[in-house]
Image (cartoon, rainbow, N blue to C red; front, top):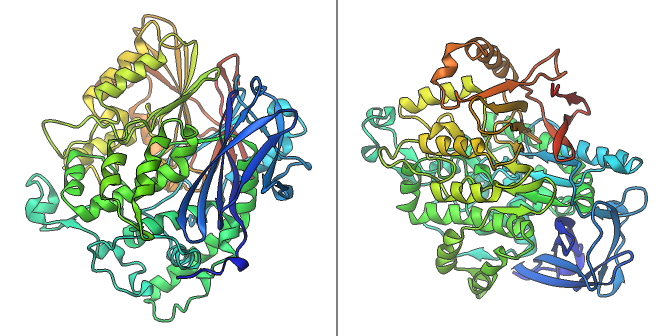
Length: 614
């Protein structure tokens, strides 16, 4: 199709500040036409390298790497900057706080924003808006300003897509002429409205005869879906869908180009009509706050890491899951689409293309006559093993990949895999040694809630690990033992601050080895979700059960894999002393001299929760 670019805004998204260090700063944009961008920092002569990735007739992902020509960027201080296109100054008003757009290159971390799990159509408020409000307030007290924003997983929900969102995705694909992939072997209805809330019916399944006789599904003769999310009714499928979805998750301007809420729902079943209307209300609220999110991300360096929903629920959870997907060319293609879109919109900015950029040449080659053919590129991105990365700050930021280097069970393919294999854990050990303090980003909590992990273990024993997402570090014997041994070493950090998400509630635990070789403290800070929540009534019950069954004096602690570690639960001022908080929030981690000083939740509602660290 031919797209009329005259009616399109040039910029859909950006500037989004990504990796920032003294030698370089990376920025990310999404545009509707070819551009020639340059960024100038006040007081510096710089060189801007532009990487332009065509994704459609009127869609380009643009990454800029800005380097000082002489010397280095100053760290831990505000650096005003300006964007130019074809040497013309861009109006930065909507991205500015108090009239200026600035960035801090972090070196000594004092204030870190962290969160995970941002689902656009969840009825809760987007707490990134509160992070924006905090940033605006901190301009009056620069020592409170966030140095870094870390998003530790589920930045998008590819497996849980609202009906109006899927409509918007397809409208944007046609409007921007987003390049499409070679058609997949799926018998989907041709009309999108007939696909809404029913895509899971057409996605690949494993015949019940192939299931283990130890599972209930075999005896009920129930086929096993490859895509095991209970909310897969609108699951993303094609490359173009994933690309449009990312744009809509971060761009207010893109929503002005589509009209997904105006479609005729009279032909829907009553339950789907009601659901579509509820999702529309939640999405309209989400869209109205996107300018705040864009302003935040233009003024703070943002680092990301995938978890399962960025690709699909239960991604690589068990060897059986991996095997089922590997045996289906269609399922492999859908999983690869999720990973490719993560690489484009998250991964390239994490390391400023330094390692991830090695995939670009092959990606360009996959576009043939404006159609994607990823046969070769799928193999290359599957072999790519450098999704993890570090940032040389104090404390050092270490972001680990807990999805693509799994420690698979050799005895039972239905057993949950360890979140990292032996080689990856050994590499992590080498990264951690000889540092006084480390900020370790693990998408799933290393030290979780014992009663919930016990319930997960029970479901796993019944052959149903996918039902309750058995994805905790302690679920795999080898991975759990090795990780605990790492923390007990004499040369590992005295202060380890672990930032995690995934679980849709927030908490603060501190951990010390009972029989360690040196005095150290591990903080487990979990903030989840940015726009998501665990069922509040159920979490209240689970918290009470955890207190009863796993109190410090409880003999049940001896049966857990972490009995060698003393775990303390820190109460908050939320609802008179809860230690588990289920409320849409992003966390603010305060650090002083490499040690944790404060842990605060900024709720989407504007409420603030403090955890008692004593």
